[in-house]
Length: 171
Image 1 (cartoon, rainbow, N blue to C red):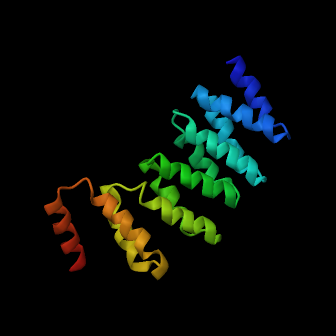
Image 2: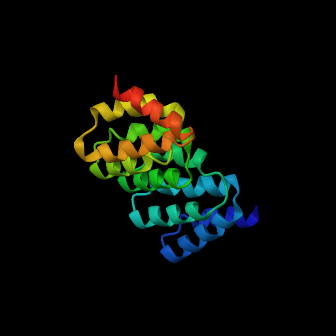
């Protein structure tokens, strides 16, 4: 706990080497407080700080989704992208709606990151949302939505996958 508290304080240092070292220490603890402190850095205005947080969160074994998902809604572009990449990396299916919400971002970079993350956060329960999205998406994002549908279908046996797709195509 002492190491965690001290390291969290060091995250606020201006010196990037100190900040990076503190983040690395926190990433090894897997403690909720450490994860929350690292996720908070996703809101930082400095993209280098956001990258330090992303790398540390990426390497921790703890559950980062509960801390990262709320940060996405408040973060700047770099923080949103980092958060989306982290949720995708962890296959955080419980945060599919957060990823979906970012598809409507005003930032083209965030939209791209959200479409890229989509395939990693879907389950079979999301198929109806994905079908609706496929009907309204722009041509440049069709492939990303199709990949998400394919991943969502993976839990079904192949014959059922074919049945589902065929049924959907006839609607």
